[in-house]
Length: 396
Ligand SMILES: Nc1nc2c(ncn2[C@@H]2O[C@H](COP(=O)(O)OP(=O)(O)OP(=O)(O)O)[C@@H](O)[C@H]2O)c(=O)[nH]1
Ligand SMILES: [Mg+2]
Image (tube, rainbow, N blue to C red):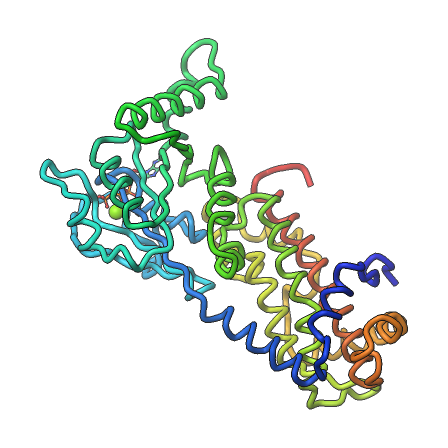
């Protein structure tokens, strides 16, 4: 048995105790169920705007982990098509995450206030303003107007890979210096247009893992209201180890809630187990894990397309059998296998968390399930890490 997985830290125990204080298991479960249901309803609407040809559509695709040429899913890129209608693109895994490709700005008679009315600015959680060179006055007008409307925006300077490639041909090339120069140039322009202490994120939609994309993500996440942070985090493209790790932590925080829920609404007794759990809930949750980590067939294929590493090579580093098959039967098998460990954890719960501990059957289900989910999450997170390292050609 892996001892580490069994350890329940004091903070978690405290959290569970507080949630259960003065409540029955059933009422706590109802509350938790409400929490998850509400989480599923939370919408995130991200607006991507900027001048024509700046790379808006490419960003919309990259942000969703897609290349530019997936029929029916990708936003069309490269063609100049000026439309005044925002186009919505759903995240392929999280339909509550909507990325909007806004019409290009910057015609000579551009009016930021009219533009924002036209694109229904209230709808968006924040705006990403993209420029592929310096930020022009239309960008600045728009930013000011967005601020007036009490919304957030981020300045993104795109196509950095192009700049780096061009500079590389010169003698004495220094990547950091080039990046600093581009950044300073953008900032200077913005300051001259009276934007106070602007931040500019340098990115390449073709190589999202490089440059400032990870920083942009962290900033967006930090500045969102709490209930939206989780939604953004899980939907982020799996392009850095740090994101994978943060996803793991976010999913981990839900484990005890899921375990409690599955134990409390238990309907099906498991043969050979003195516990009853709701297997359906667990299948759904584990499926959620591999979708968040991008380990499902479709996501692996997208990653392969984006990085030019054959999908078979990505699959070759997967170790968890969960990647191939996840069903009620598989979950029941896992639970049965882990029952012994679960019972050991139970003793801990009996002494520390009275409500769970006092219900013998509920307690066993809870402890076993919690242990099993933790194991699955650990395994899948590790697979995700290996896939990413393989995709980015890092030594495994
Ligand atoms: N090298 C490189 N090329 C990019 C990047 N982003 C966009 N491009 C290219 O720039 C061109 C325009 O990109 P789009 O994403 O279509 O730009 P857009 O802002 O949606 O353009 P419109 O819809 O016409 O306003 C395409 O050829 C893209 O492949 C990038 O980060 N790096
Ligand atoms: Mg476009």
